[in-house]
Image (cartoon, rainbow, N blue to C red; front, side, top):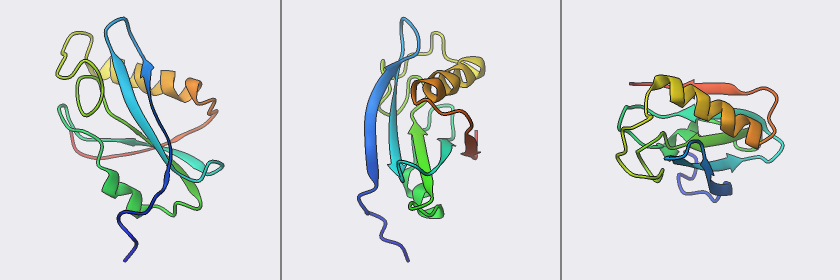
Length: 110
């Protein structure tokens, strides 16, 4: 079994996605790896970092983003401007911020 607590963190930060919201993200794995956005369950869930154990962290760059209002995103539990359309917008904002041309999506639940 892989080490569940390996130190794979490359970056953690917030990005402003609206006048109200800042979303929190973490990047794990290889800096030059294949970019995969990990979309957590919800609404109301938060990033599940154990999912990184499903990937070869030498090959993939995993981007975990806490959706608006949950996890470490701010403000916590804010529902205004928080819907499926803005989630898609936030992924695109973060993709552009990270200067990624193409990404893969991985997620489950909702």
